[in-house]
Length: 246
Image 1 (cartoon, rainbow, N blue to C red):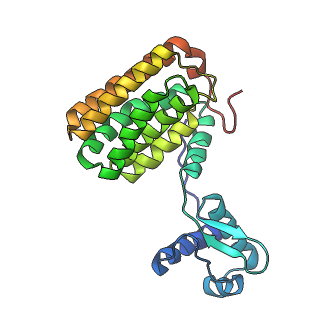
Image 2 (image 1 turned 90 degrees about the vertical axis):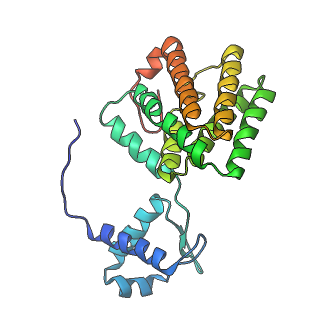
Image 3 (image 1 turned 30 degrees about the vertical axis):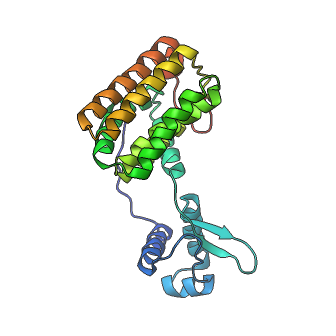
């Protein structure tokens, strides 16, 4: 059961929010060093313990890297989907949700991503998508390359949608549903079929045909669903767990 509770935010969390606001206000870039601790203590009017808790939280979120020693301190970083993936995994684990939850989410999300990509994808992303299709087909005998290119293909479609939330979300979901780590295997027949449908999606996106792109991605995700249900039903029913699938 999902429970919604309203609790007052801790001072450290409020300070963390102010630090992020100040990073944006100053226009800090990745690699920039934040002010030293003594300056931040005065600016945010909190104790050393509270400030350090705020900085550690932002480090866990990928916003900062804390460099020790002289010349160290908080360094601005670019957050990625890792924190999002961890948060989603923990939420689903405490709901005892199975891995099929992720496949169902992909069924709903990815066709819309393909539709938007057909309308918004950049020239550079389209080149990358074409490379995925060609490189995957040229290396059908290498399952590692096949899996890697499948991952890159879906990431690129999500990025091409022009919706940054889709891009982060699909990356996090694919991290959680790593077929190779779960022991899934992809025989040659399955690899060829995947290459064919990837090419069909690419051509629809390249043609700027959102309806065809949506339909092709629906066909693709439905095929993934059928394959996983037929060959790995026990894995789909396995509860999601953070840090392992044993």
